[in-house]
Image (cartoon, rainbow, N blue to C red; front, side, top):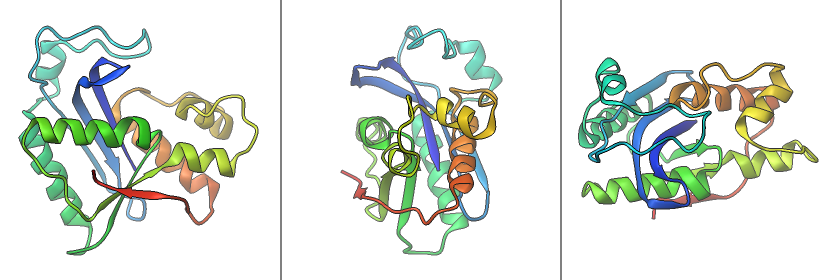
Length: 183
């Protein structure tokens, strides 16, 4: 599972910039987290009061790096926990409308080609099938329903990726549904 945090206008992903990537390997529970210093100034306000206001001080405290360094760290981590030439399934909540296109936009912006063996799976679509008739399918609401508590440090990449990981494990079903390749 993975999650991105980004700044910009949520209605226009072309104007957004990823500032954090968090991931959890579904079978080994290995985790990954990196903070990115977006190449924009000033940092726009958060999407809502639920999100962190990005500041230079916050990025310094988290030892933020540039996007290319972060990307290299992510791909190295993925290679370290998977076998060579394996198909990689990147699972995110609302992946098809947010995380997948945002990753495509930011990699293109930095002249990076995403690996062609990466496929994307949307847990939002899956949860709607597996847990019918919920009033809300936000990650936080599903987590609250299953675990009767808020996601600790929600709207941060690694905590949200861990929450999704725990939701999928809690469903205890074979994960199935559509996957789409990069681009």
